[in-house]
Length: 379
Image (cartoon, rainbow, N blue to C red):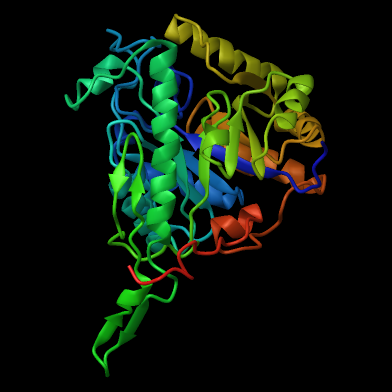
């Protein structure tokens, strides 16, 4: 399947960058990692590059070099701020770029996430999204003490079943207020039309949620939902944006053919420099400093913005609608994206010169969904 231009671009923001040694780079800002100013600067840089959206990583457990739990390393970044709250802090300070924080669906309640993302959509004037994540690790369960997640294939299947129901509940809560439920007529004393608020009445294996939400329907109706393709959650949850991890162009074709979502974005870790040899030297230096190599889930690219543009356009021609770049070093590689890669793509007629929409759905070309309860009877 081929896709028409333009290419869509996003970045995934994670601490000092996706390489574990990034915080020790001369250009890094480790002292600022837990400040609002640091995250504001990053998102403003992404907006300077006219990117479609940023995703902000989060998790219920500490970062680790191990896949099965915490490690004992003290030479890598540990600890993070809440992604939804970072996005809410940045939203009034930016105007165009989409904001997609990660919110975990295991151990948390869909009612809370529904109103948090709806609130983000209000304070960003329609630029919110939500990246869905599950939690399967025992030490993360221990933070809550309410349940133990079963391990093995059955446990994973349960997590995905729960996550799919979770997303459905959130979407119903977003719809539980009709778009014109708020009257705000001071003369008659009517602020809301109670007939346009609806119980969602969701009952399943994992949740029994009555609603309605306490937050009016978000400006976008439903903020776009993103999820990884690998687990199958994206398909089950009807994600608007699927994140994939292709290794080459043939891989892209295979992946795209299996996806039904409106947008398929490839994840790619990047180390950039105007000189290709220098970029590869940056990568080697980071690996040497870390001492344990760098085996991310996504492929790693080290080279020039021009070389990266070549790869992205090949992948785009193979069917991807967009690419989510994972800067190995922040802010260095983000700046190379916004001030090196983007101009390169613009020169080739493959990327926008200005924002053409004011909402995230508008940037992604997604229609505003109808409210499922608009024709229903009174709650």
